[in-house]
Length: 192
Image 1 (cartoon, rainbow, N blue to C red):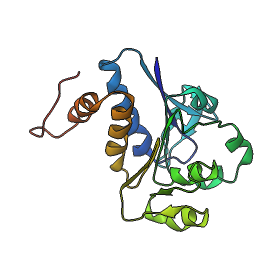
Image 2: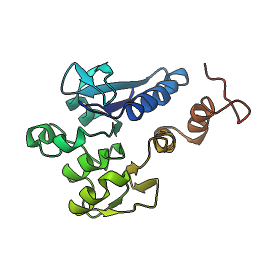
Image 3: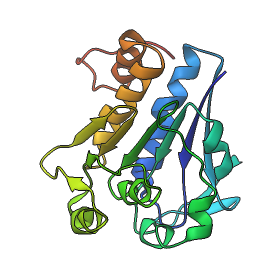
């Protein structure tokens, strides 16, 4: 079974979690052995916009997942200072795909995953990420370094998820998932 986790927390950016959740769940229409879970430290996390989101697992599940997707939001600033939270992750970029949206890159840096690498993030987090010793490529919407990818700007999640699906499966599967959400007339794939 191929497993993906989306890491949520209090004050996460809604679109980062929900867009990735929707796109990744479309894989299950192609591969019944694919599983995606929203994980966190609590059974319910509240988004920036006030939506209460029930999690379906704990963050330690990330340690065995094939894909780990970190959302962004103001809540990342608290997480990067919480050593107990960070110690719960035992990620392996040699065996796992690890990606982040916007300020989620701060968490990757705090976990030591961006050491010696360049990354991108949302403009409001550029100085913080650079202050953590990461070379920030602020003019790119996505930066890929081996099995680690960072993206900037909420709609960059489409490209980020597409990259992950291509790596987990193939370009045909990724194209079918992305085509299924394109505006009418731009190449729909009927996977539903």
